[in-house]
Image 1 (cartoon, rainbow, N blue to C red):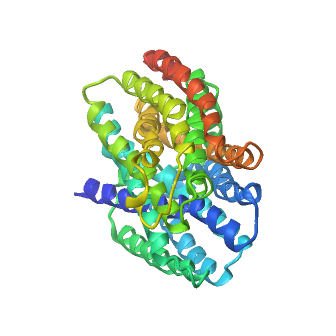
Image 2 (spheres, rainbow, N blue to C red):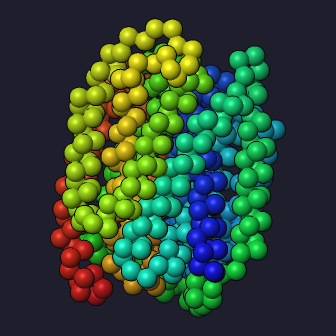
Amino acid sequence: MRKSTIKIAMYLNYFVFAILLNSVGIVILKAQKNYGVDELQASILEAFKDLPIAIVSFLIGSFLPRIGYKRAMLIGLALVSVACVNMYFGNSFGTAKLLFATVGVSFALIKVSVYSLIGTVTDNQQEHNSLMSSIEGVFMIGIAVAYFLFPAFNSEVNPDAWLNVYWLLAAISLVSFGFLFFAKFENGTEIPGVNLADDFKQMFKLFAKLLTIVFVISAFLFVMIEQGIMSWLPTFNSKVLHLPENISIMMASILAISLAVGRLLAGVITKKVNWIWVLSSCIVIAMLIVVFVLPKTVGLDVKQINSLSDIPLIGFAFPLVGLFIAPIYPLLNSVVLSALPKKLHSSMTGLIVVFSALGGTLGSRTIGYLFKNEGPENAFYYTLIPMSLLLASFFILKKLTSKKNEILT
């Protein structure tokens, strides 16, 4: 029963933060229209979100079990509740920066806690793969909800009406806080001790392993691709397809839904198919979509658009790239974490989150730069470069993870 309660708490927390974290693409679009900033300036919001994730994850990743996973998650939920209310009253680009900085700090606490807890509530690699993919799938469902939630509060006559969504987000965060507060955690999920120096030494020793280096580079490349596309898809829809603002945001939900479906399916498929073939097939198909489908989307002659049904079918095709890049992140994480002793999961998760955050920041900044200097119709083609590098990294990781004795020494 306690394991089931912990799983529900993890799902709920991830759902809340999915909406908050990935509203950055929507706020980037609103910032350009409401606060008078250009594409490159607006892209800094990704850095305000991801750099605090990286810094806090590095600082707390190795010794979070000593603080307590439950306590850490409660702190994160309390912080974002306050930040949401502050965004409503602040209503400025500066307040948006503060919001995402707070969300970043809080998510670092949440993600390291959740990833570490997965190892304590599963008994083997198959269960680990399945739960990891399911949690990441719920995360994508939260992102899809965000793309409909924000337009629901938008108004053509009142440019500030969208800020009312932050009252709802604050309320959801408090509900999650309440559920987690009363949830009972098993003693085995906390690790006693006080030697902070040894904790940091453990993380640096882990980083010295070739497996860790290749893995964090892979995580960096994936998040660079995913966040680059996700953060800028609403702007792409608005500036290239010339869709109305609300429809541009809702169209971006197709990517999130595709990611959710892909991750949930991955949890089933990998029970029968080796992860290396799943991931290599997925990345090749994603590259083919960029090469063959994206040009047709860019060249689309869009007429008068009043609803999603007015958009030609090819307009929905590019966001389906999410279906194929979806399994990459959770499966890579699961493969590496399940190859390590549980006592190292928190330290490795800290490294995962650090490099994921850095990849997200660089991806969004790079696409923002390309949107401004190469044109919004050309920016996404550059994702082929990290995709090619990621494909090569899969086979290196496969070779390294097959040598379990070397991993554990």
